[in-house]
Image (cartoon, rainbow, N blue to C red; front, side, top):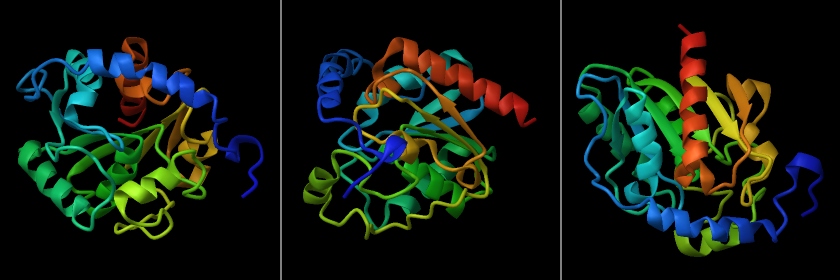
Length: 231
């Protein structure tokens, strides 16, 4: 397959930058996995990316909690790929943590694909969806890990067990992407105008969205701005 411009998956050498982030991923994985933030804060759910877990998103959840959110992990263990019941299980998770309020859903990488479909399946439970370096647009092969994903997840990227709909879900959607992403093509994570409400560019690695102290603060700042504009 031949891609041009922003449609092109990152060069293979960029994966070295992502590998360098693994040390931060390990270091920032220490801490409790219980809900974080003020008990009366608005609820938020963070969904980890592929081959990640709630421990991988501790830095991101801590930053959201410091901004006043009551932040919850997905509590579904390691994300080894989409399953037929992934969205229904997340919908039950929303009902558990929402307590009558709509929930902000933040999805990192593949977790953002789940977040969008969750917003489509349960718009009455979702306040907004935020995707971080998530390949929700374009061709599912516009990344440099799709072959490995197929081997581990056990299904083809163009025939997943959950819907892959590129049109915007019926809730507010902020897509945060990076030109320095070493895994996902910029176009795939940025999307087209009709596929999200707003796209914001940050300068970080793919792993940085969840483990970089600077990047997670940038993410929380952009979420706050986005939600304030929509009030």
